[in-house]
Image 1 (cartoon, chains in turn brown, cyan, green):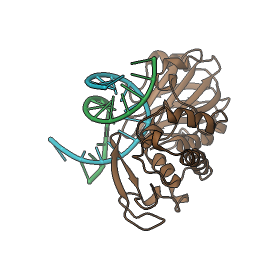
Image 2 (cartoon, rainbow, N blue to C red; image 1 turned 120 degrees about the vertical axis):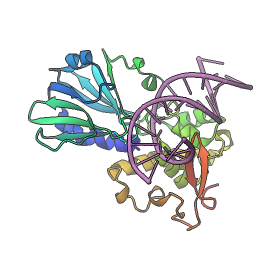
Image 3 (tube, chains in turn orange, brown, purple; image 1 turned 30 degrees about the vertical axis):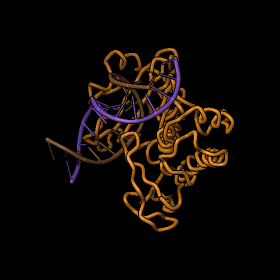
Image 4 (cartoon, chains in turn brown, red, cyan; image 1 turned 90 degrees about the horizontal axis):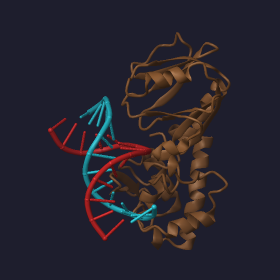
Length: 258
DNA sequence: GGCTTTGTTTTATA
DNA sequence: GTATAAAACAAAGC
């Protein structure tokens, strides 16, 4: 579930609590996550920066090495006191100085942990070819337009393509297309100038607004995504349509999206 | 056992 | 190498 806004909110929430803290030790509950040698390397290092790239969370350490976490579907990062109750789905605990610990909880165990040396982000396939950050300044209407015109696939597919644009998944993809009035199955090269402009601005406004609301669905009741499962369109009350794109379901309104 | 959920990777095809 | 779609993968709930 965590897409760009959700991950951004996680990063903002934990940043102040982790910055400039030292890792005193690490306990692994899930051996598939990482290795003993990485744990040894990380031990004693200071967390000097926490940032986000797409849906990846990056912990920059003081030796220029970086720990990277991807939450995938059910991953969560929690900061707890050592005596706090331990969830049975806890996969990893990073103990910090100052009586706090960072817990990686992930019921379905789909989350990933990476470790890279000397800022070598090229080593991770998902990061190497990742597209522009939609909320950054170098994501301009001009470049968006040019790159979109080269693509022949369905627009929903392209929005979810991390190589084209970073951080959008199924839920925000649907929301962006709904608020843009564009159907998910539309071919990219068929979009008009006006539609591309609308789409560009909606990508930014939807993601920005979601972050402002802490990506909390209960805070966004006026949004389409909230009741979209086989539900009714919030604008025209017609039953929503469902179509399979890229192996997952897209929901849209026949009336409000063309 | 199949269907569903997710993001990413892999494979096949053009 | 690029673009695309489909399938596979991870794990778990129903």
